[in-house]
Length: 385
Image (cartoon, rainbow, N blue to C red; front, top):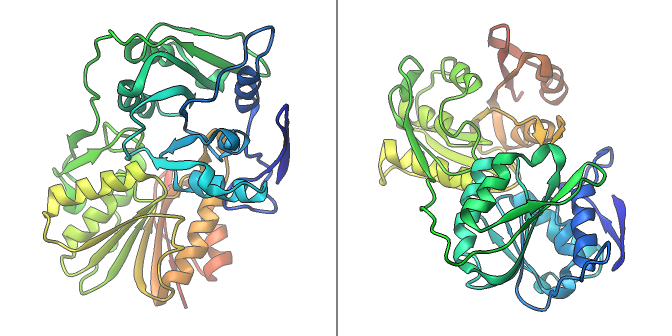
């Protein structure tokens, strides 16, 4: 936990879940720059926050917590960001009812007077978000984007310009930059192109030639990534009434493949991204219909899965948290999988060879075997004993 000092006071903030050894703060220089802009810097007028304030993409709830007195609406695709926001509000003595938490799938407010956008890593997610928010923006809306310099590109500015209105940027401060956009209510805009559908290639097991549905911001939204392709070619061959979990499901192609290969199994798709779970459900239904039973959960890994209730967990863990490289998410997933698995249950993991997941799996399970590997990827198997 660290303390953010602003003109509004000091705020104790942490990421979620909070790890004692986590070296990363719950905010960055872009958040600080944006908060100073709202207060009025370099002679600029402070921003009037008396109307409806919407904060989009607040990564760990820092902006929402600092602005809690103005009863902001937070919109995020991240379940963990919502949990971080609630924890940080409580940590600083704020009533969680002072803010309204919406997911990227929820309908935004009908009118927005101040729109604050933390630029996401995914340009597609930004595009979809701006399309969803544009109808609520009016000529007097203050629109400010924020991000680190490496996150803001010409294509970023063109999206604001094309969907909201004329756009300019600030000078860079501590490697952060702001985006100022003037809404143009008369701007003609095409509908959002998301979600996107494509057909899978042949030669990848049970899902060969099948349809994938991707909402905006999901990893490899327009083609199958090579790591997942490798995993699909080495999934376990099982039969019977297994309970299978596609952990960190993304668009759900791995869990859908498992369901197609074993029609007696019940598959649960889990991700912390609302749009990922929506993609997984759409992919599953497009290939197995509406009558096949499956579960779709937005949550913190395996936290909501009953201990000892799962036969097989399939996992392609992320190794980035926004711009930071970390194995914290993988470690949490591995520990959660072990708790959820029955005796004899298995965790199958695909990852880049250099990440060394075998070491962590041996620590967690006491065993790990290599199922398949190539110069870039490895598929690992750990058994709960």
